[in-house]
Amino acid sequence: MYMQNIFLIRYIHTNTNIGPLTKLFLWFRLTTNEKYYINNHLSFIVSFHQNLETHSARVVGFELKAFSINHEYDDQWGYTNRLSTCDPHAKRLVTGFDPPQEVDDREQVIFTYDVEFRESDVQWASRWDTYLLTADDQIHWFSIVNSLMILLSISGMVAMIMLRTLHHDIFEYDQLDNLEEAQEQTGWKLVHMDVFRPPVNSELLCVLVGTGVHLLATILITIIFMVSGILSPSNLLDEYIFVIVVVWALMGIFGGWAMARLLYKTFEESEWNMKASLTTAFMFPGTVFCILYVLYSLTSGGESWQPELYDGMFGLLFLWLVISVPLVFMGSYICFTFIGPETKESVKTSKIPREIPEQSWYMSPIFTIMVGGIIPFVVVFELSSMLTSIDLHHFCYMFGLVFVILIVTCAEVTIVSCYFQLCREDYRWWWRSYLTAGSSALYVFIYATFYFFTEPNITELVPGVLYFGYLLIASSALFMLTGTIGFYACLWFIRRIYASLAIV
Image (cartoon, rainbow, N blue to C red; front, side):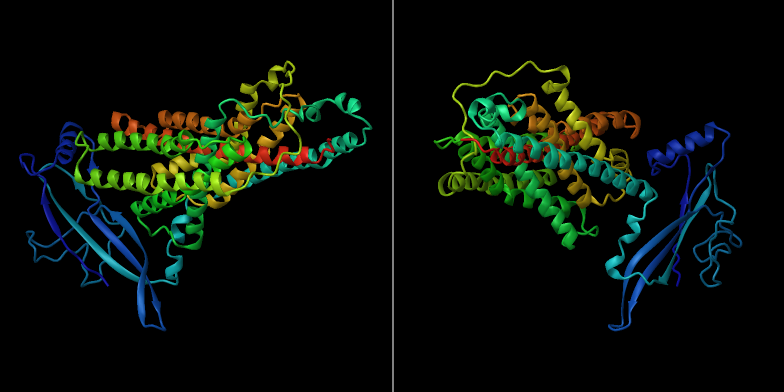
Protein backbone atom coordinates (compact mmCIF):
# COMPACT_ATOMS: atom_id res chain seq x y z
CA MET A 1 0.00 0.00 0.00
CA TYR A 2 1.56 3.28 -1.10
CA MET A 3 0.83 6.91 -0.48
CA GLN A 4 2.50 9.73 -2.32
CA ASN A 5 2.68 13.43 -1.60
CA ILE A 6 4.65 15.70 -3.88
CA PHE A 7 6.10 19.06 -2.89
CA LEU A 8 7.68 21.55 -5.25
CA ILE A 9 10.41 23.88 -3.97
CA ARG A 10 12.19 26.47 -6.07
CA TYR A 11 15.83 27.10 -5.16
CA ILE A 12 16.16 30.71 -6.29
CA HIS A 13 19.16 32.72 -5.22
CA THR A 14 17.25 35.94 -4.55
CA ASN A 15 14.40 34.33 -2.60
CA THR A 16 14.25 35.78 0.93
CA ASN A 17 12.34 32.77 2.26
CA ILE A 18 15.34 30.46 1.83
CA GLY A 19 17.07 29.63 5.11
CA PRO A 20 20.71 30.42 5.85
CA LEU A 21 21.84 26.77 5.49
CA THR A 22 20.32 26.58 1.99
CA LYS A 23 21.94 29.86 1.01
CA LEU A 24 25.30 28.61 2.27
CA PHE A 25 24.86 25.37 0.34
CA LEU A 26 24.05 27.24 -2.89
CA TRP A 27 26.98 29.59 -2.35
CA PHE A 28 29.39 26.66 -2.11
CA ARG A 29 27.79 25.19 -5.20
CA LEU A 30 28.30 28.38 -7.20
CA THR A 31 31.91 28.88 -6.08
CA THR A 32 33.13 25.34 -6.81
CA ASN A 33 33.08 22.96 -9.72
CA GLU A 34 31.93 20.00 -7.67
CA LYS A 35 28.58 18.36 -8.15
CA TYR A 36 26.04 18.00 -5.36
CA TYR A 37 23.16 15.57 -5.06
CA ILE A 38 20.16 15.72 -2.77
CA ASN A 39 18.07 12.97 -1.17
CA ASN A 40 14.63 13.97 -2.33
CA HIS A 41 12.74 10.68 -1.83
CA LEU A 42 12.01 8.86 1.43
CA SER A 43 10.76 5.28 1.53
CA PHE A 44 9.01 4.26 4.76
CA ILE A 45 8.56 0.56 5.53
CA VAL A 46 6.13 0.07 8.43
CA SER A 47 6.10 -3.38 10.07
CA PHE A 48 3.03 -4.58 11.91
CA HIS A 49 2.17 -7.72 13.86
CA GLN A 50 -1.31 -9.13 13.45
CA ASN A 51 -3.07 -10.83 16.36
CA LEU A 52 -5.41 -13.46 14.98
CA GLU A 53 -7.21 -13.92 18.30
CA THR A 54 -8.23 -10.31 18.77
CA HIS A 55 -8.29 -9.48 15.03
CA SER A 56 -6.11 -6.45 15.61
CA ALA A 57 -2.67 -5.29 14.50
CA ARG A 58 0.02 -3.22 16.18
CA VAL A 59 2.99 -1.44 14.65
CA VAL A 60 6.22 -3.10 15.81
CA GLY A 61 8.82 -1.21 13.77
CA PHE A 62 9.69 0.85 10.76
CA GLU A 63 12.56 1.45 8.38
CA LEU A 64 13.50 4.58 6.50
CA LYS A 65 15.52 4.70 3.30
CA ALA A 66 16.62 7.89 1.56
CA PHE A 67 17.18 8.10 -2.21
CA SER A 68 18.35 10.73 -4.65
CA ILE A 69 16.01 10.51 -7.64
CA ASN A 70 15.93 12.65 -10.77
CA HIS A 71 12.18 12.47 -11.24
CA GLU A 72 10.78 12.32 -14.75
CA TYR A 73 7.37 13.49 -15.91
CA ASP A 74 5.53 14.36 -19.13
CA ASP A 75 5.28 17.90 -20.49
CA GLN A 76 5.49 20.89 -18.17
CA TRP A 77 5.30 20.25 -14.42
CA GLY A 78 1.97 20.58 -12.65
CA TYR A 79 0.34 19.15 -9.58
CA THR A 80 -1.80 16.86 -11.77
CA ASN A 81 1.19 15.31 -13.52
CA ARG A 82 2.07 11.68 -12.93
CA LEU A 83 5.72 10.86 -12.35
CA SER A 84 7.17 8.05 -14.41
CA THR A 85 9.89 7.47 -11.78
CA CYS A 86 7.48 7.18 -8.85
CA ASP A 87 3.96 6.17 -9.75
CA PRO A 88 1.73 4.42 -7.19
CA HIS A 89 -0.87 3.58 -9.83
CA ALA A 90 1.64 1.73 -12.00
CA LYS A 91 3.35 0.14 -8.98
CA ARG A 92 6.54 1.95 -9.94
CA LEU A 93 8.90 1.75 -6.96
CA VAL A 94 11.94 3.91 -6.34
CA THR A 95 15.20 1.97 -6.35
CA GLY A 96 18.80 2.86 -5.85
CA PHE A 97 19.52 2.24 -9.52
CA ASP A 98 17.55 5.29 -10.67
CA PRO A 99 19.58 8.32 -11.82
CA PRO A 100 20.35 10.69 -8.90
CA GLN A 101 19.07 14.24 -8.54
CA GLU A 102 21.80 16.82 -9.06
CA VAL A 103 21.25 20.15 -7.35
CA ASP A 104 21.96 23.33 -9.23
CA ASP A 105 21.15 26.98 -8.80
CA ARG A 106 17.63 28.07 -9.79
CA GLU A 107 16.56 24.46 -10.26
CA GLN A 108 13.30 22.83 -9.26
CA VAL A 109 13.46 19.91 -6.85
CA ILE A 110 10.57 17.49 -6.44
CA PHE A 111 10.32 15.83 -3.02
CA THR A 112 8.39 12.57 -2.73
CA TYR A 113 7.85 9.76 -0.30
CA ASP A 114 6.15 6.38 -0.23
CA VAL A 115 4.91 4.14 2.56
CA GLU A 116 4.79 0.35 2.52
CA PHE A 117 3.14 -1.80 5.20
CA ARG A 118 4.61 -5.26 5.82
CA GLU A 119 3.39 -7.97 8.14
CA SER A 120 6.03 -9.05 10.66
CA ASP A 121 6.50 -12.01 13.00
CA VAL A 122 8.00 -9.74 15.68
CA GLN A 123 5.67 -9.48 18.65
CA TRP A 124 4.84 -6.29 20.50
CA ALA A 125 6.94 -7.17 23.55
CA SER A 126 10.05 -7.75 21.39
CA ARG A 127 9.76 -4.66 19.19
CA TRP A 128 12.78 -2.93 20.83
CA ASP A 129 15.17 -5.87 20.37
CA THR A 130 16.27 -4.45 17.02
CA TYR A 131 17.99 -1.53 18.70
CA LEU A 132 20.03 -3.87 20.87
CA LEU A 133 21.63 -5.50 17.81
CA THR A 134 24.14 -2.74 17.22
CA ALA A 135 27.28 -2.92 15.14
CA ASP A 136 29.56 -3.03 18.19
CA ASP A 137 27.59 -5.77 19.96
CA GLN A 138 30.46 -8.27 19.74
CA ILE A 139 32.88 -5.73 21.21
CA HIS A 140 30.39 -5.04 23.99
CA TRP A 141 30.15 -8.71 24.92
CA PHE A 142 33.91 -9.16 24.59
CA SER A 143 34.43 -6.38 27.16
CA ILE A 144 31.98 -7.99 29.56
CA VAL A 145 33.61 -11.43 29.23
CA ASN A 146 37.03 -9.84 29.72
CA SER A 147 35.74 -8.12 32.87
CA LEU A 148 34.38 -11.40 34.19
CA MET A 149 37.70 -13.17 33.66
CA ILE A 150 39.63 -10.49 35.54
CA LEU A 151 36.99 -10.59 38.27
CA LEU A 152 37.46 -14.33 38.64
CA SER A 153 41.22 -13.83 39.01
CA ILE A 154 40.71 -11.26 41.77
CA SER A 155 38.19 -13.55 43.44
CA GLY A 156 40.75 -16.34 43.46
CA MET A 157 43.27 -14.05 45.14
CA VAL A 158 40.76 -13.05 47.81
CA ALA A 159 39.81 -16.69 48.38
CA MET A 160 43.46 -17.62 48.81
CA ILE A 161 43.91 -14.88 51.42
CA MET A 162 40.77 -15.81 53.29
CA LEU A 163 41.08 -19.59 53.21
CA ARG A 164 44.82 -20.12 53.44
CA THR A 165 46.78 -17.17 54.80
CA LEU A 166 44.23 -15.89 57.29
CA HIS A 167 43.21 -19.34 58.43
CA HIS A 168 46.86 -20.26 59.04
CA ASP A 169 47.57 -17.00 60.92
CA ILE A 170 44.50 -17.32 63.11
CA PHE A 171 45.30 -20.95 63.93
CA GLU A 172 48.86 -20.08 65.00
CA TYR A 173 47.67 -17.13 67.09
CA ASP A 174 45.12 -19.25 68.95
CA GLN A 175 47.79 -21.82 69.82
CA LEU A 176 49.92 -19.33 71.76
CA ASP A 177 50.09 -19.95 75.51
CA ASN A 178 50.41 -16.42 76.92
CA LEU A 179 50.07 -12.78 76.09
CA GLU A 180 53.82 -12.17 75.80
CA GLU A 181 54.09 -14.63 72.94
CA ALA A 182 51.10 -12.97 71.30
CA GLN A 183 52.76 -9.57 71.49
CA GLU A 184 55.79 -10.95 69.67
CA GLN A 185 53.60 -11.63 66.67
CA THR A 186 53.81 -9.29 63.69
CA GLY A 187 51.46 -8.26 60.94
CA TRP A 188 47.75 -7.60 61.11
CA LYS A 189 47.32 -9.43 64.45
CA LEU A 190 49.56 -6.93 66.21
CA VAL A 191 47.31 -3.91 65.55
CA HIS A 192 44.13 -5.45 66.97
CA MET A 193 43.89 -2.77 69.67
CA ASP A 194 44.04 0.11 67.17
CA VAL A 195 42.18 -1.18 64.13
CA PHE A 196 38.80 0.13 65.33
CA ARG A 197 40.10 3.51 66.45
CA PRO A 198 37.87 6.27 64.90
CA PRO A 199 39.60 8.17 62.08
CA VAL A 200 40.16 11.89 61.73
CA ASN A 201 37.22 13.78 60.20
CA SER A 202 34.94 10.88 61.05
CA GLU A 203 31.86 13.08 60.62
CA LEU A 204 32.72 13.84 56.98
CA LEU A 205 33.33 10.15 56.35
CA CYS A 206 29.87 9.34 57.75
CA VAL A 207 28.30 11.96 55.47
CA LEU A 208 30.03 10.58 52.37
CA VAL A 209 29.04 7.01 53.26
CA GLY A 210 25.43 8.08 53.85
CA THR A 211 25.33 9.83 50.47
CA GLY A 212 26.82 6.74 48.83
CA VAL A 213 24.15 4.51 50.36
CA HIS A 214 21.53 6.97 49.12
CA LEU A 215 22.87 6.69 45.55
CA LEU A 216 23.31 2.91 45.80
CA ALA A 217 19.67 2.41 46.83
CA THR A 218 18.53 4.67 43.97
CA ILE A 219 20.49 2.72 41.36
CA LEU A 220 19.35 -0.67 42.67
CA ILE A 221 15.66 0.34 42.61
CA THR A 222 16.02 1.86 39.13
CA ILE A 223 17.66 -1.30 37.75
CA ILE A 224 14.89 -3.40 39.30
CA PHE A 225 12.32 -1.21 37.54
CA MET A 226 14.13 -1.68 34.21
CA VAL A 227 14.51 -5.44 34.58
CA SER A 228 10.86 -5.88 35.60
CA GLY A 229 9.66 -3.89 32.59
CA ILE A 230 8.27 -0.91 34.51
CA LEU A 231 10.78 1.22 32.62
CA SER A 232 11.41 0.26 29.01
CA PRO A 233 13.12 1.85 25.98
CA SER A 234 9.70 3.07 24.85
CA ASN A 235 9.70 5.59 27.69
CA LEU A 236 10.88 9.05 26.85
CA LEU A 237 14.08 10.44 28.31
CA ASP A 238 12.09 12.90 30.42
CA GLU A 239 10.15 10.00 31.96
CA TYR A 240 13.39 8.18 32.79
CA ILE A 241 14.81 11.26 34.50
CA PHE A 242 11.58 11.88 36.39
CA VAL A 243 11.42 8.32 37.72
CA ILE A 244 15.10 8.38 38.76
CA VAL A 245 14.69 11.71 40.58
CA VAL A 246 11.55 10.50 42.39
CA VAL A 247 13.27 7.27 43.45
CA TRP A 248 16.28 9.26 44.62
CA ALA A 249 14.06 11.52 46.74
CA LEU A 250 12.33 8.54 48.36
CA MET A 251 15.63 6.80 49.14
CA GLY A 252 16.74 9.67 51.36
CA ILE A 253 15.70 7.74 54.46
CA PHE A 254 18.37 5.11 53.75
CA GLY A 255 21.07 7.77 53.37
CA GLY A 256 20.18 9.35 56.73
CA TRP A 257 19.98 5.96 58.40
CA ALA A 258 23.40 4.83 57.09
CA MET A 259 25.03 8.10 58.18
CA ALA A 260 23.55 7.87 61.68
CA ARG A 261 24.34 4.17 61.99
CA LEU A 262 28.02 4.80 61.34
CA LEU A 263 28.28 8.00 63.39
CA TYR A 264 26.26 7.12 66.47
CA LYS A 265 26.59 3.34 66.65
CA THR A 266 30.03 2.57 65.21
CA PHE A 267 31.89 5.71 66.28
CA GLU A 268 29.70 5.96 69.41
CA GLU A 269 28.74 9.63 69.22
CA SER A 270 26.50 10.19 72.24
CA GLU A 271 24.76 13.44 71.26
CA TRP A 272 22.51 14.31 68.35
CA ASN A 273 24.54 15.98 65.58
CA MET A 274 22.36 18.32 63.53
CA LYS A 275 25.30 19.37 61.37
CA ALA A 276 25.89 15.83 60.09
CA SER A 277 22.25 15.43 59.06
CA LEU A 278 22.20 18.83 57.35
CA THR A 279 25.41 18.07 55.46
CA THR A 280 24.06 14.70 54.29
CA ALA A 281 20.84 16.30 53.07
CA PHE A 282 22.37 19.37 51.38
CA MET A 283 26.01 18.79 50.38
CA PHE A 284 25.80 16.61 47.27
CA PRO A 285 22.22 17.50 46.19
CA GLY A 286 22.91 21.22 46.61
CA THR A 287 26.07 20.99 44.51
CA VAL A 288 24.22 19.12 41.77
CA PHE A 289 21.36 21.63 41.82
CA CYS A 290 23.74 24.58 41.42
CA ILE A 291 25.58 22.91 38.52
CA LEU A 292 22.32 22.05 36.76
CA TYR A 293 21.04 25.59 37.20
CA VAL A 294 24.17 27.03 35.59
CA LEU A 295 23.99 24.52 32.71
CA TYR A 296 20.32 25.14 32.03
CA SER A 297 20.91 28.88 32.17
CA LEU A 298 23.56 28.55 29.47
CA THR A 299 21.30 26.49 27.21
CA SER A 300 18.47 29.02 27.57
CA GLY A 301 20.53 31.82 26.08
CA GLY A 302 20.66 33.89 29.25
CA GLU A 303 16.93 33.73 29.91
CA SER A 304 17.35 31.48 32.91
CA TRP A 305 13.81 31.73 34.20
CA GLN A 306 11.89 30.91 31.08
CA PRO A 307 8.77 28.77 31.77
CA GLU A 308 10.24 25.39 30.80
CA LEU A 309 13.37 25.89 32.91
CA TYR A 310 11.34 27.29 35.79
CA ASP A 311 9.04 24.25 35.87
CA GLY A 312 11.91 21.74 35.71
CA MET A 313 14.07 23.42 38.35
CA PHE A 314 11.09 24.06 40.62
CA GLY A 315 10.07 20.39 40.41
CA LEU A 316 13.59 19.28 41.26
CA LEU A 317 13.77 21.75 44.12
CA PHE A 318 10.40 20.57 45.43
CA LEU A 319 11.40 16.89 45.43
CA TRP A 320 14.68 17.75 47.14
CA LEU A 321 13.47 20.08 49.89
CA VAL A 322 10.00 18.67 50.54
CA ILE A 323 10.64 14.92 50.21
CA SER A 324 14.35 14.05 50.28
CA VAL A 325 15.52 16.36 53.10
CA PRO A 326 12.79 15.33 55.60
CA LEU A 327 13.41 11.67 54.82
CA VAL A 328 17.15 12.07 55.49
CA PHE A 329 16.38 13.61 58.88
CA MET A 330 13.78 10.93 59.58
CA GLY A 331 16.23 8.12 58.82
CA SER A 332 18.99 9.61 60.99
CA TYR A 333 16.61 10.33 63.88
CA ILE A 334 15.09 6.84 63.80
CA CYS A 335 18.54 5.25 63.88
CA PHE A 336 19.72 7.55 66.69
CA THR A 337 16.60 7.08 68.84
CA PHE A 338 15.15 3.64 68.24
CA ILE A 339 17.99 1.47 66.89
CA GLY A 340 20.11 -0.14 69.57
CA PRO A 341 23.90 0.01 69.57
CA GLU A 342 25.84 -2.29 67.30
CA THR A 343 27.46 -5.37 68.70
CA LYS A 344 30.63 -4.44 70.52
CA GLU A 345 33.76 -5.03 68.50
CA SER A 346 35.61 -8.24 69.23
CA VAL A 347 38.70 -6.34 70.41
CA LYS A 348 39.03 -3.27 72.60
CA THR A 349 40.68 -0.05 71.49
CA SER A 350 43.65 1.14 73.51
CA LYS A 351 43.82 4.70 74.82
CA ILE A 352 47.28 5.36 73.41
CA PRO A 353 47.64 4.96 69.62
CA ARG A 354 50.29 2.52 68.48
CA GLU A 355 53.21 3.90 66.52
CA ILE A 356 53.02 3.00 62.83
CA PRO A 357 56.27 1.68 61.32
CA GLU A 358 57.81 3.48 58.37
CA GLN A 359 56.18 2.25 55.19
CA SER A 360 57.75 1.39 51.86
CA TRP A 361 57.03 3.66 48.90
CA TYR A 362 54.70 1.13 47.34
CA MET A 363 52.60 1.01 50.53
CA SER A 364 52.20 4.78 50.76
CA PRO A 365 48.55 5.96 50.86
CA ILE A 366 48.69 7.85 47.54
CA PHE A 367 50.25 4.95 45.64
CA THR A 368 47.90 2.26 46.98
CA ILE A 369 44.84 4.47 46.47
CA MET A 370 45.71 5.27 42.85
CA VAL A 371 46.65 1.68 41.99
CA GLY A 372 43.51 0.33 43.64
CA GLY A 373 41.28 2.57 41.52
CA ILE A 374 42.76 1.37 38.24
CA ILE A 375 41.38 -2.16 38.53
CA PRO A 376 37.65 -1.28 38.80
CA PHE A 377 38.14 1.22 35.98
CA VAL A 378 39.76 -1.35 33.69
CA VAL A 379 37.38 -4.18 34.58
CA VAL A 380 34.06 -2.39 34.43
CA PHE A 381 34.16 0.84 32.51
CA GLU A 382 34.11 0.28 28.75
CA LEU A 383 33.90 4.04 28.35
CA SER A 384 34.88 4.15 24.70
CA SER A 385 31.78 2.27 23.51
CA MET A 386 29.58 3.88 26.19
CA LEU A 387 30.53 7.45 25.33
CA THR A 388 30.26 6.72 21.62
CA SER A 389 26.78 5.28 22.12
CA ILE A 390 25.71 8.39 24.05
CA ASP A 391 27.21 10.65 21.37
CA LEU A 392 25.40 8.77 18.58
CA HIS A 393 22.14 8.39 20.58
CA HIS A 394 22.45 4.60 20.64
CA PHE A 395 21.09 2.31 23.33
CA CYS A 396 23.34 1.21 26.19
CA TYR A 397 22.30 -1.99 27.95
CA MET A 398 23.55 -4.70 30.32
CA PHE A 399 23.78 -2.12 33.12
CA GLY A 400 22.54 -4.66 35.67
CA LEU A 401 25.36 -7.14 34.98
CA VAL A 402 27.99 -4.40 34.77
CA PHE A 403 26.79 -2.92 38.05
CA VAL A 404 27.12 -6.30 39.80
CA ILE A 405 30.65 -6.66 38.43
CA LEU A 406 31.42 -3.15 39.70
CA ILE A 407 30.22 -3.96 43.23
CA VAL A 408 32.17 -7.22 43.47
CA THR A 409 35.33 -5.74 41.95
CA CYS A 410 35.41 -2.71 44.24
CA ALA A 411 34.80 -4.90 47.27
CA GLU A 412 37.50 -7.44 46.45
CA VAL A 413 40.15 -4.91 45.42
CA THR A 414 39.61 -2.93 48.60
CA ILE A 415 39.78 -6.05 50.78
CA VAL A 416 43.10 -7.13 49.24
CA SER A 417 44.56 -3.64 49.61
CA CYS A 418 43.36 -3.43 53.22
CA TYR A 419 44.86 -6.81 54.09
CA PHE A 420 48.30 -5.83 52.76
CA GLN A 421 48.05 -2.55 54.65
CA LEU A 422 47.25 -4.27 57.97
CA CYS A 423 50.08 -6.72 57.42
CA ARG A 424 52.39 -3.67 57.39
CA GLU A 425 50.94 -2.72 60.82
CA ASP A 426 49.18 0.34 59.41
CA TYR A 427 45.73 0.47 61.01
CA ARG A 428 44.51 3.68 59.31
CA TRP A 429 42.14 1.89 56.98
CA TRP A 430 38.93 3.90 57.30
CA TRP A 431 39.63 6.66 54.80
CA ARG A 432 41.96 4.58 52.65
CA SER A 433 39.30 1.93 52.03
CA TYR A 434 36.88 4.63 50.89
CA LEU A 435 39.40 6.40 48.65
CA THR A 436 40.84 3.22 47.13
CA ALA A 437 37.58 2.22 45.48
CA GLY A 438 36.45 5.82 44.95
CA SER A 439 39.59 6.75 43.02
CA SER A 440 38.19 4.89 40.01
CA ALA A 441 36.01 7.98 39.44
CA LEU A 442 39.19 10.03 38.88
CA TYR A 443 40.21 7.72 36.03
CA VAL A 444 36.73 8.00 34.56
CA PHE A 445 37.03 11.79 34.59
CA ILE A 446 40.50 11.70 33.01
CA TYR A 447 39.40 9.27 30.28
CA ALA A 448 36.24 11.23 29.51
CA THR A 449 38.33 14.41 29.26
CA PHE A 450 40.67 12.68 26.81
CA TYR A 451 37.65 11.47 24.85
CA PHE A 452 36.30 15.03 24.66
CA PHE A 453 39.45 16.33 22.95
CA THR A 454 39.76 13.41 20.52
CA GLU A 455 36.33 12.09 19.48
CA PRO A 456 33.20 14.31 19.61
CA ASN A 457 34.85 17.31 17.86
CA ILE A 458 33.06 19.86 20.06
CA THR A 459 34.43 23.34 19.38
CA GLU A 460 31.79 25.66 20.85
CA LEU A 461 31.84 26.86 24.45
CA VAL A 462 28.33 25.96 25.60
CA PRO A 463 28.43 22.26 24.52
CA GLY A 464 31.84 21.94 26.17
CA VAL A 465 30.57 23.41 29.43
CA LEU A 466 27.57 21.07 29.31
CA TYR A 467 29.83 18.08 28.71
CA PHE A 468 32.12 18.80 31.64
CA GLY A 469 29.24 19.85 33.89
CA TYR A 470 27.45 16.53 33.47
CA LEU A 471 30.79 14.70 33.67
CA LEU A 472 31.54 16.37 37.00
CA ILE A 473 28.16 15.29 38.40
CA ALA A 474 28.58 11.71 37.18
CA SER A 475 32.17 11.43 38.45
CA SER A 476 31.23 12.78 41.89
CA ALA A 477 28.33 10.35 42.19
CA LEU A 478 30.57 7.48 41.07
CA PHE A 479 33.22 8.47 43.63
CA MET A 480 30.77 8.31 46.54
CA LEU A 481 29.11 5.15 45.21
CA THR A 482 32.28 3.09 44.72
CA GLY A 483 33.85 4.54 47.86
CA THR A 484 30.89 3.40 49.94
CA ILE A 485 31.07 -0.09 48.46
CA GLY A 486 34.78 -0.37 49.28
CA PHE A 487 34.28 1.01 52.79
CA TYR A 488 31.57 -1.47 53.77
CA ALA A 489 33.51 -4.35 52.23
CA CYS A 490 36.54 -3.49 54.38
CA LEU A 491 34.42 -3.01 57.50
CA TRP A 492 32.89 -6.47 57.04
CA PHE A 493 36.30 -8.03 56.32
CA ILE A 494 38.02 -6.53 59.37
CA ARG A 495 35.22 -7.46 61.71
CA ARG A 496 35.31 -11.02 60.45
CA ILE A 497 39.03 -11.58 60.81
CA TYR A 498 39.40 -9.95 64.23
CA ALA A 499 36.33 -11.73 65.56
CA SER A 500 38.16 -15.00 64.82
CA LEU A 501 41.05 -14.16 67.16
CA ALA A 502 40.85 -15.60 70.69
CA ILE A 503 41.89 -12.40 72.46
CA VAL A 504 41.16 -11.89 76.17
